[in-house]
Image (cartoon, rainbow, N blue to C red; front, side, top):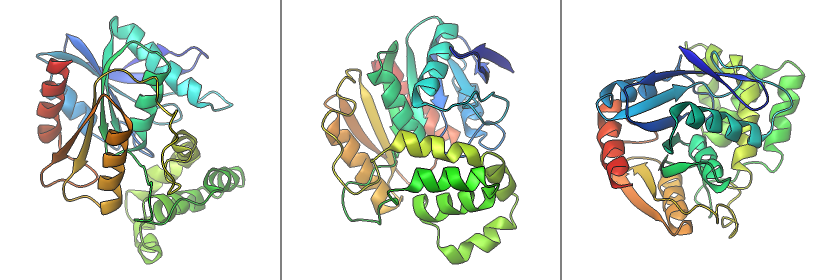
Length: 267
């Protein structure tokens, strides 16, 4: 494991694989290296052509977390990784991590291209929108020590898990790691902003993104997520939309790595 120091002094932990063109993999809500091995597996598959960064977003895993939170701090974390790489990077983002990747590109970081996997966008009535006070509810639960309720809100309101499934999930090995980083769920809520409100994306959001963008979705995913991927692709003039056969809101390294290789070779 290595670290970079972000602009506010926060240590950001990462593993880097291979040499060559930098590729930075950005997790979505609740994920980090200890619970999502796919990023490391992708890096190992691409060692011949890329220097792949699998990192822990701030507040998760082995990275630090300096208060107060701001989206700009996470953009600065990515900037520190790009500086370590020494040249413009391709960014890949899972779910809400894809919106952070877009924000980083819009902020003018040296980025060669973006690959976005199922960005959490709802622009119609295909599913209920997030509560307008979603972030405030999450932060209240965490401040009151009710991290389990923050995790439950994320699972039911954002991930659309049925309420009756939650008691069983709380007994699974998956639940404790989610509770541990429940304070970071609101970070992704802030990054999403109004993207899951059911309203069209604001015309000026990501207007400064000029680099090539590939928007991916699994052809077996929930209708809301495939619709969201299409909405993002239509919103970005430089975007291309691609379905991944047989996948849903996730995929395997062996499937993802060739897609990333092909995209990076074209940018």
